[in-house]
Length: 403
Ligand SMILES: *Cc1c(COP(=O)(O)O)cnc(C)c1O
Image (tube, rainbow, N blue to C red):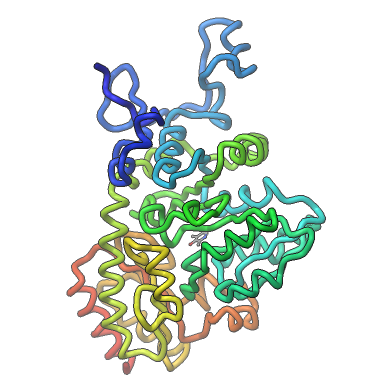
């Protein structure tokens, strides 16, 4: 009997999450390789002219050109779809390519978007600057207040766009409430799930329509490649996203797809372990700082909701505020001996950054303040180092910064 491949949905849908992460989307060639093959090929060849015609017409399955399909990319897309519990997935060259595709594939002039105020800087740029240029109106709200979603709806509202937990203030959105509201009004929810990954949170289970990723973050998780993904129903992917993606070409390279595919094999372990360390480091830092923003700690205003939506852990990222503003934040960063100063997240290495001068520097000071990105705010990604080494490093740096 031939073994089940990871491309056979009838079999793979019975696999539990950790098995999907290791074996989902495995599509072996005639060589029977253990690790998935890397098909670095832009084009494909055909045995005869009738065959190429049949492939282009869709009568025959098979590859034609890597902007349309590629075996390595298809393996990654199948694995992500399985892990997410989605009917289908397509990948893009970066998280921002994924967000842009997820929005622009379905929005037209005259439509209205409601988006969360607390968001990754470039996601806010899409909403604040790109959408209006094409006649798409946007309203930005405090997404952590349920009623603000109700109040923002207009007759032409087409999309709700938000992340949870949000970058960099770790605001938590009530997925069930917002997705139910959207359903009732025929609005499409697009959730940026980069901070969580499918191991920690699966928005489709709460009724979300589209889940978009920066796969650069936890999915690769080792600081190697940029990647993005969009998951949704087969109908959405085939009839809404693909016409946009196939003709505009924000595709992920097979090489990067292969790297992310390898990252997914350890995602379940990494996401859980980094969540545990993140909670422990958060508890260690909390008494020494002015404000702690950690969805996994009781001091977070939506701690109960966060742990219900993310039962396997609230992720590796949290933020905290030092009372002495930028000067004290920089003093703390400069005193680190082990943890790196870096704006990346989801990495196996612990990284600390000052959002107001980096990831959110291009926003106006007013918009930053409204978002809670103060001059004393620091955001940390907790990696896989020994927690005691991380505590010692932070302890030393806090003391040097006078905390
Ligand atoms: C990093 C990030 C993005 C953008 O992803 P890239 O891969 O850097 O393009 C989008 N949303 C969130 C929440 C992110 O953290």
